[in-house]
Image (cartoon, rainbow, N blue to C red; front, side):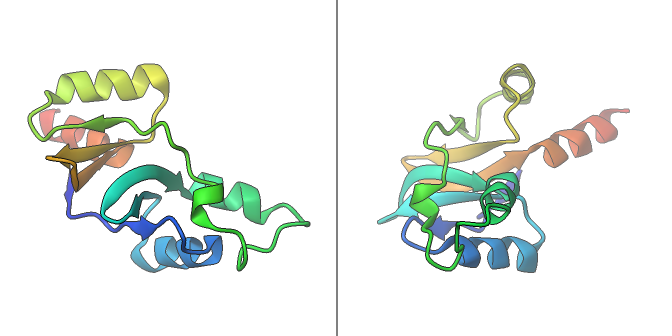
Length: 119
């Protein structure tokens, strides 16, 4: 799990999200409004919209593109349960929440690191 992950405000532009992902070399950004988790946006979401000729990413907001059905877990959720759910639902990440606050993010890369540590 990555503790204290980078996040983005729902009212930020898609262009800003893309820049932030590139700068920090990350693929997922939990989307917040007033500190509350509203959704998540991935690099795949960003690239898909950026590929549309009729869309200007400097005007489109993250809240217009984000996925609102976020897979969220607590820090004490067993890794086996998280990995199993991510695999079965084809989720790229799980947002780790503690008392309605984003405290981490667990991605497929984190899962691969955990697997490599066990092998």
